[in-house]
Length: 276
Image (cartoon, rainbow, N blue to C red; front, side, top):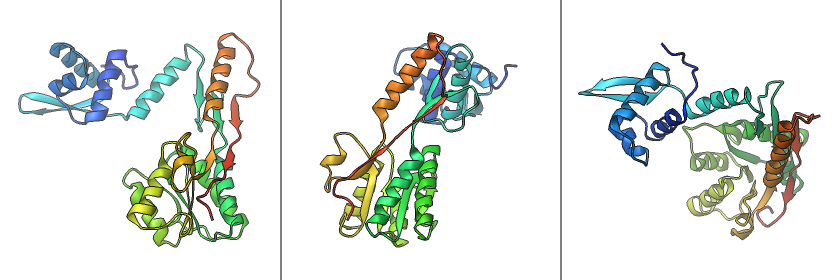
């Protein structure tokens, strides 16, 4: 019996990715989802191996087995990275829970949340809201956001300042924040979170930004400035983070000493027209 933590081969990972995407699948489903030709018997053999490794569970439906993942994609990838770190240097970007031997480059998420809240407060906002998913980077921003509210003696309302899980979506969270009296919203992230928020506010709820409610987002290069209104953002140094991580990795592979294992880069406020 193979151990549950046993490493995945390249083909096994490829097949796991099909199941993570499709959900419950039989051999034919996986074969179709691979996007390339692979013999039925080969796919079947790999699925059975993954089952023995504890990565999949299977259930007989009719005459065929249907397979489901027993581990999440994130967990499996973390295991691969841990194994990789045993053989070569690895530099993480935006990882928060570090062991003493890990290297990371990240932006100052705490400062981003604090800066956004301070910007609202300095413009007279009394009920700022935070909209972000339940992930480590958003949690750090929320800590900074709440700190600024506490310093200004403003209430920290959980209806306006909490993280949302996978069972929620941006529309429901933004709607809840507005109904809880928010006069401004910080929607951080570089994956168009603020654009979704702006859409909900403008086209679903019929509010005007910034006349009815102010909005700060994460910077999306060549997009944020073109929105209506042009979006005030907190810009994270994504390009510099990548360059610093590459430099750190290069130094590690050549045996140079790295004085600081954790490198935190500063953020900046980009003022445009979405805060009044």
